[in-house]
Length: 448
Image (cartoon, rainbow, N blue to C red; front, side, top):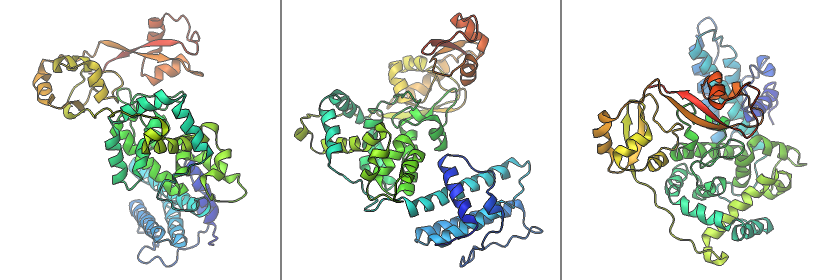
């Protein structure tokens, strides 16, 4: 087993990457780093008199790519050596005030940490067995979940299955195209019941129940106009990426799904408390996981088991809902959905359901690709000039339920609103006069 000064840096970067925090520098890596050996055409000799910061970063990227090639071939030692040298290289970069160089340096540091995390995890915690398939186990835990779905949660299961038809075909295709098990397309049934606007107490949203930080990490934008966690296509692509990353860490789908539910850090800590450093199976870990997470994978298996033979478990499942066909048009200005819906001869709710990521019942004050029912695109485009643009001075409102720990100033910042205007609108005398659960009307000035 390779042992260098960078070993501690690898572990530090591993846990930093798990927590989504990158170390400013790694002390062990700043000291002497053992040179990589046997890396043909990738070994970089830094010459500070000739190399620019940009070329150093390019060389570091080459080393990262070489490390990936080595790891793919199963040569973990050389992969770590290449990452070792890449990290040492970027420490030489003095980006100064150049924002692009600073961003490039941070991107490479994150990538190196992520690669080290994956290698470290694959060495020490990956479960044994066939890692590409979902293990369809039948045991007492799965049977307990089947009984719950037959009884207390029967209505939830049937309604969720009914809604699944609107989205699951496209979800299954996304997983298939990514080389992941298509059975994962049923995860939204237990995550959200296939409700596109599902929201949890932890502020997780959408079919895939992304919390804000994980959504941001996987490219789901969130601003005053949109929240892409609510978009079925965009959130599915993010879920594919997240599940792929988790599989690279844990190596088996049972543990991956546990991590998806409660976070990779929670699962890694549970594993670290075991006497052995790997998993023979997910069920070794079962008792150490949070209650909800421990039941998450058995419930997923229960869903798959019932869907395989509904009649055996007392279910008669009708044909699920069909997807709503749509086309897209580009709007160059901000328009109310209900105004456009009226022009199209459809309900505002139907148009909003096609565009669930829109937070304010209107398109952004910038070019935006809007989904409209199939066959309605030409009608929409022909009538756009007749639609009145929303006034920049017109005030619109959203409603907010006060959560624990929130203050008026926090709420005002979140909605880009004026705190005094919120107080006036809601008849609040002092900024401290709000309570948990209180429903506030938030005035917003539109930007058109």
